[in-house]
Figure 1: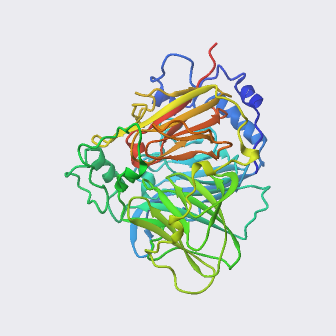
Figure 2: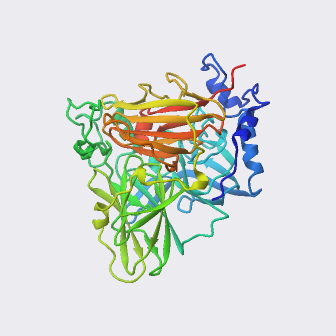
Figure 3: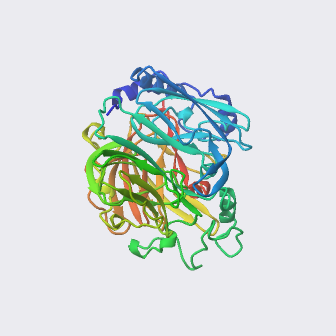
Length: 536
């Protein structure tokens, strides 16, 4: 794989000479000038350290620039029998493709009547191009434009999406595939599969769902119909405190999450008019699976086939063969399959919702599978975190952490406030009311993610990839450390689960880490990984 060889010495040298640099981005200074706590100064998005880190990536890049344009606007799209008036990018079906080490230059034009921003999910890019409003950039106002320019250092399956409010729920997302120039490819055909849950333009608007949740819409007074939006609340006596030992089988299915959607889509098509992938019998297919849903965990299987997992969140893993995989919002999995002869259902079951997304893989004639088909593979061997082992070239060096942070995942449905370490993130004032996770350039960092709710939380770290370290159940005692766990940027933390991850602080700036459920993030389930300059 084409991974830049950045050493610990490179990281430390990148900070030398920039220790006294001051951020000069007027927009961000105006937004956050008064919220600085006393102590070592933060390395801001427009700092000299960020520029130096990007220069290092550029020196190891290809020297090529890939230019493209995205226009965020209202459009009417055909979902295959249903028409949705929604928001989208003008070329969202195709997405963007480049090669590892290329410079991407993407002009974004905002033709919406709301501010907008774009986040490049999973990329180890420069901090001022990360797309987080009020933290790494000012919003792109209606009628405005911004050019995102950055080196795309790592090959793999990624995607991009709006990072303002719940705009992602309106269809503002698309694939981003970064090819490895050294990878000869062990496949004959390639399919990019995007799973999504959909309500905008056919049911309740995402902002209306969020408003109902925030005003206590989990009771009887919410205005969104249950079949189109919010699932009614659990009994009043139910608590978000997880008991000392939680049997996950006892968690009610409807608590997989709290939003029920009219449609579940595969490549923006309904199960009754599915997207069809074509190939020949015996061909080897690479399936790039992207979970773009706002609030759904999908269980995925291909009827009549087993799945060999080759990559997780863009990074290679030692191949492991299973029947089915589970993906939370933001996660990506690459699969290798040798195709049979016929027409096969590719199914993504929405966990806990009695619904599914469906596509068809066709290598021969015959009838297409039914929209409600349930391949037996869905009940077969499910991929576990402990099954995933990073390949040798992308493993972190052995070592203990220099700094360790624990994040307790909690929340309340009554006021719809979601918290990390009992703190709620405010996207308008990012540093207000939270305690950032402080790190210094070059440190080895461990994050312990402890889910104290009976809901799934796909936890995403911006600007970095981490290596899975441990996977335990709260109250059941620590399990053995994972040996060479997968490299990821998003990990699905289940009810009562504790996941530990390690990473190297090799990308200076201010980075959001958060639950990738769109409504949990909007409810405050986020904090900031904050790079600090050394004390003098």
